[in-house]
Image (cartoon, rainbow, N blue to C red; front, side, top):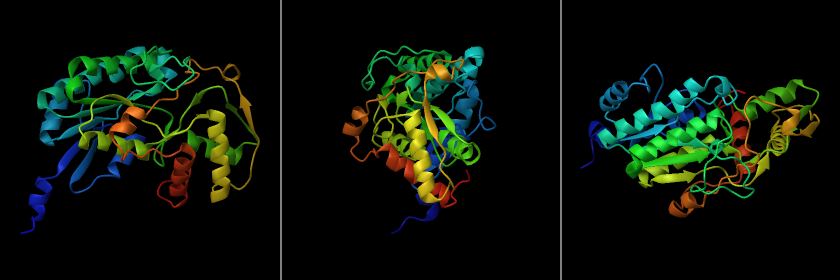
Length: 305
């Protein structure tokens, strides 16, 4: 006898995503199904700085798992706003971990390549020593430490880098806008990492929950690039797809040519083998292929530049 609709819904998994407005939350919302419902909540729905608020909301939604995609991500502003960065990236993360432990909910938390110094020269392993260069990275590292102290037995920390999506503001969209109006661009060529399409990251988060895979791990797309390489690829694909009308010169510049309040890692490529080996169905495409996928989605009108 087939399940009635209300019975089917009752049997589904409810995954609460904390951080409603971000790129990852949007991509996660696109993966919501009847059997794996993704519900994204923002600051108007719960207060991540208040344990009681977090607990009340998760109980009200009858949550089965939590993905924390919220963060203070203004890397340069964090240098002069450290109290707020630590409040959102560390203390609030501890609150979320505490509530998830009390309710026995699996927790996936998104962290960053900025926890590393950037002087290793080969891809960073999840167990490598962390040594952040600035407040943003240090606050994210503190959040990781709190999860590992409070709820390591049922938590997954996924470090990622250079995230972009069809939704929200990101490097790809900024480049497309600038390439349409500027006669030329200078882009940093001595910071090395890997771009990550948030669509693949969203799938990785859900796979960690369904596979009950815990611990500290890394996820980005595959391959290596500088910001200069990334920008050149964006222009080439945009011209092929008709998102840009003309080519402009793109010059490689150094970090010293473009000083910022916060220091960035020189090299922050992340080794993804722990996740890839444990979850064979994990999407690990080359960053240029994923970039084309995202920009094709833009052209198709799924989101506006």
